[in-house]
Length: 193
Image (cartoon, rainbow, N blue to C red; front, side, top):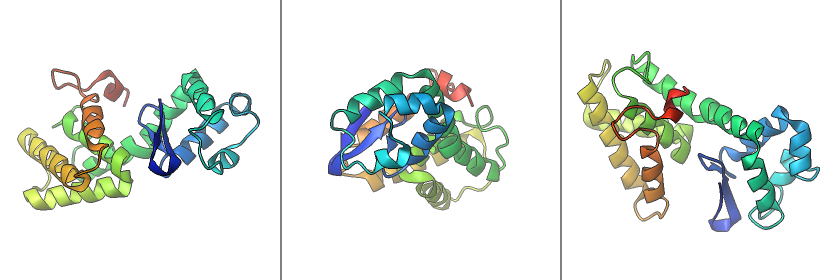
């Protein structure tokens, strides 16, 4: 997946690693994982050279990213970077609240909400939204399942407030729902954690 945002900034990959956010770290991870494939796909360029290009959505760069996205080792690099850069901080935030097994304990929905909030607002922004939700609800650890749902709902409300009028909000909400199956259980993606 690759898309162009305003000011020629690209999003790339399954969680839309952004050129101003997680894309530089992802490209470095891809380059380390398989340097020969990186050089072949990106025609001899390294990460820093790629990031210096003003519009990566133009050809031939768009095609290069599409090829990189189809390459299994770079798909694995995306999963690794999503875990390291967004999921682990979400898990750590919940562990600070006494939730020792965030995938299976209390509310996997809350974990999915925290993960996607980190993806869309950055880890610092996600942590700030979590703290604000806790203040607004007055909740403190340990959380019951109902309290975890209340906290998750408040996180969603704060995200809506901060995203009001921004076109990416609906896509963001739709993507959050893909982390959970229709019956409310963690999706296959979430179970990898």
